[in-house]
Length: 559
Ligand code: ISL
Ligand code: CA
Image (tube, rainbow, N blue to C red):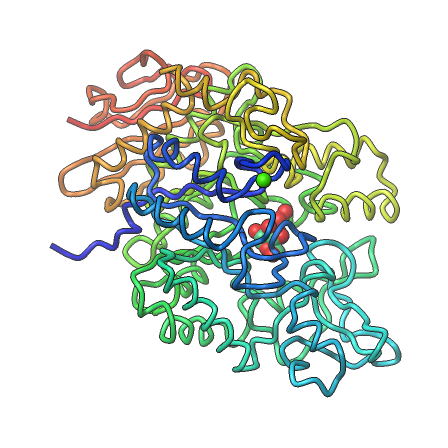
C-alpha cells in the first residue's frame, strides 16, 4: 500500500496561548495552562496542537513581533515549561507545531537594533532599507495595519519596510545570511522534538527587485502593494532551499499561511513533488467580497453561499491528487464562524454543528480553533476602549479620522469582522472568569460564558463539543474522507451546501443547510435509502426529498 504521511490523518487544534488558560493568576494564558488542558484536548480527539507564537516579544501584535526566536515569552513561562509541555503532549500521542514568523521581526530584535544603528552596520542588510527620493519613500503602499509600509528612521533619513506594524520590520530574504539564521533557528526547535510549523505570511518573503507603485486606494493617498509583494519572484526558490536545508531532515508537517493565493498558485506551494510545503491556508472563502468593498472587511460585505461553495469546491478539485488542502473556518484573525456563517442566536448549536460537518468531511487536514468546538461566538464590547488588537485599533482611528465614519458604523465593522472576536478568553466553566484566570483577564470575556463553556459542553451529550468529537472519530473511521474524490452538487443552490465523496468502496453525501427555515432538498436517488452516519438533529425527514430543518447537516452513505 502507498505510504500515507501522518499529517493526512491528523486533526489540528489551534491554541492562542494568551487566551487559552492562565495558570498563575496574572490574567494571561501560559504554557502551564496548556499543560493542564492536554487531557481535555485528548478527549476531544485532536492529534496536533498548533501554538500561536510563544517567543519573546514586546507584544505589539501579540507575539507576531518576535524579539528573540530562541526564548520563551516570560509571560508564557520558561524553556523548561515548554520542554515539559512537549514531553507531556508526546506522552499522550499529541504533536506540537509552532508558528514560524520570519517575514518580519520585532523592531526590538537585536538584529534590527543593530541594523538601525547605522547604514554601515553589518546587520544593515538584514532588513529592507531605502533612501529617500525628494524626502519620500519608494512607494505609497498601504500596510496591513493601516498607514504606509515605509517608516522613516530619523537617524539616517532612510526608510525601512514593514508590511505590518512599524514595530514589525520586514527581513531581507535576499540576504543569504538571514536565510541561514532562520534555518539554524528552525533546527534549534526541531531538534527539541517540535513536530511542525505553521508559517506566517510565508508568501510575502520574496520582495520584488524594484518597488513599483500600486493601484490607488480610493479615498486615501495610499496604494495597493499586494500584487507586487505576494508570491514574489524568488519565493519558490527560498522555500525549496528551506526544505532542502531543514525540513527534509525531519518528519514534520508544514502549513503556509498564504493570503491572496489561488488554487493554481497554491499547488505550487504544496504540490507533492515540489519540495516546499505540505499545505497552505488560502483565504478565498473568508475574504469574499472584501476586495471590492469600500474599506474592505470593515464594510463586511454580505456573503452568498454559492460563492463560498464555488471557492471551496475549486480548492477541493484542483488540489485533488496534486497537493493537499487545509480546512478551516476559524482562526485567531477571523471572526467566529458560527457568528459569521451560521446563526449565533436561536440556532447557535445547530449551525455550529452544521459548520463542523461540512468542513470536516472535505478532503484535507482540518484545523479547529480554540472555542470553535464549543460554538463560541463573536463579542460586541460597548466601546473601542475594550479592544486590544492593533489592526482593529489602527483601523478604528483611520475610519473615524480620515473616512468620517461615525462610532456606530466603525463598531459595526469591528463587531462583524474584528480579530478580537476570536481572542476573548477560552470558556472552561461557568465560574468566575470562565475558569480562564483567577486574576483579571488581559482582555474582557465574552459575557455568554455561563451558557457556553467546556464543562457544560462535555456534560451534555447533545452539545457542539460532542458533535466535534463524534465527527472527528467518524472521519477517521472512513478512508473515503481522506482519499476520495469531491463533487459539488447544486452549485447555485442558495442555502444548501452539498457534495459527494467517493472512492472504490464508499459513496458519501454530505449536506448542510445554511438557513433558519425548513427547506425541501432533492438528493441523488442512490442516497434515498442510504445509511445516515451523521445528523445534527434527532431525525431526518424525507427519503429522496429531504426536509432539511434549520441548519440541519447530514452525512448519508449509499448502500
Ligand atoms: O488578519 C488579517 C485580516 O484581518 C490578515 O490580513 C492577516 O493580517 C494576514 O493573514 C497575516 O496574518 C498573520 O500575520 C500577521 C499577524 O498579525 C496575524 O495574526 C497572523 O496570522 C503579522 O504577523
Ligand atoms: Ca499567566
